[in-house]
Length: 310
Ligand SMILES: [Zn+2]
Image 1 (spheres, rainbow, N blue to C red):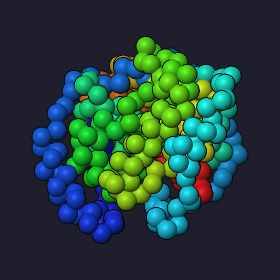
Image 2: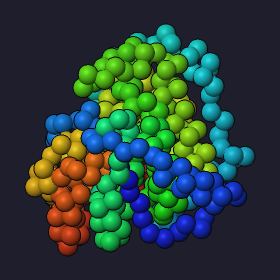
Image 3: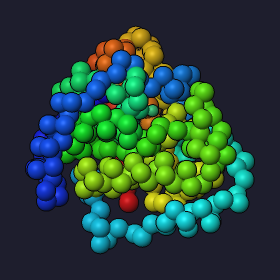
Image 4: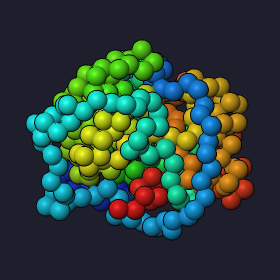
């Protein structure tokens, strides 16, 4: 599934253009699957409106982090040594250390691309709607999706309307003891948690020259130790407030109704989860129906990084 947006294809590290041209060629060979991330949450949690407002930085310095200024991150062996003895006490979508809402006056739309045999397409109509309405979004991209869509991933990374987040390397629930969600086995230990996060982080950095600030696990499930590891390696683990498309299973009318709920409170602090990897689902039509009305009612949107300044 895909997405992207306007403008700004000029910024990038040296060599990016050449790399992108190679990636674009590779994209022609990319396979596309039929389905998507059926494993994402199917039930809509109750939104909890939040109010306070944090002034949003208009055009923040994105995720760009020059290597020389990037904080040293712990090694895998350091993470294993520090966290292997810790026993998790929480498991779910909203455990300690995981962000599910913000203090911003804006709503945040997040769209996942889960990858895998049934989840590696791109919902271009959804992306076109976002671009047409100039609605920014944070796109959580999985390593498998990047492998299937390297040129598209690079295009999205270069689009200033979007911010890329890390959606894991193998799309696993983030656990230190193999706990499963929606039938998908979680990572089995602290070392696997590290690999699930950092293998895709490295892929995204190679792709874009930027270090994503945010991580959402496959299925958005975490235990509290895995969430702590995510924070320890320098990323913010993210869940959601509003389940917009039920893992891209909702029909368009349901998507529009669920997303439309953020009109209450003008969307302040809400984080909406949906998908851009299942164009056959109702997500694109649902957002096309809901967004104009939300904008008319004064809802404003921002990328996650704009609502959580460094
Ligand atoms: Zn996913």
